[in-house]
Length: 232
Image (tube, rainbow, N blue to C red):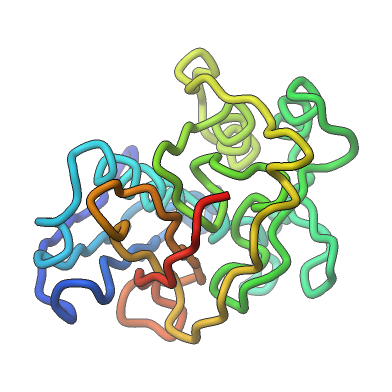
């Protein structure tokens, strides 16, 4: 009997240092409420050894978000479910439509629905908040030196059906226009989720992170490697 969510974590050998960091995804969900019951996160032991504690914590938090349904369970209609909180999939302007997240997006200074990433291939597009709008927020497709979880991200979990505490959010504000326009588009990769460790001792580079639906081992596995991106 599972009354919450069970996430298994394994440290395994994937491809050695500097390659795939890890992979994650929901592996079972309830047909009664379309909520995840179990999930898996796997991390490459060679890469974990190179991450400082703070960075690894952010990687885990990001991947837990995907296991809980952020980006992975936004549209259940394709498998017989009823939930659909994303609009414009397959277009250049997708948005998240959940009322709780939209309210927090408005409180941050945004207008309309929440912008969702449309670039970066099937692993990134339609599964993260838009990088050029949100920059270093935890659930964008790029992992920054610091990655705060905003009230908007937490509220999006409420839109999926969770009971949430918005006071647990990190301090976050939208970046300025210059920062938002400085990012390069994510690099396409057919592996799914990709996230590699930061490069260099300063650990300041952003790293490619992509997500696709499905548990590790499926065609939609969440697998992490990275194409390093220069900081703005």
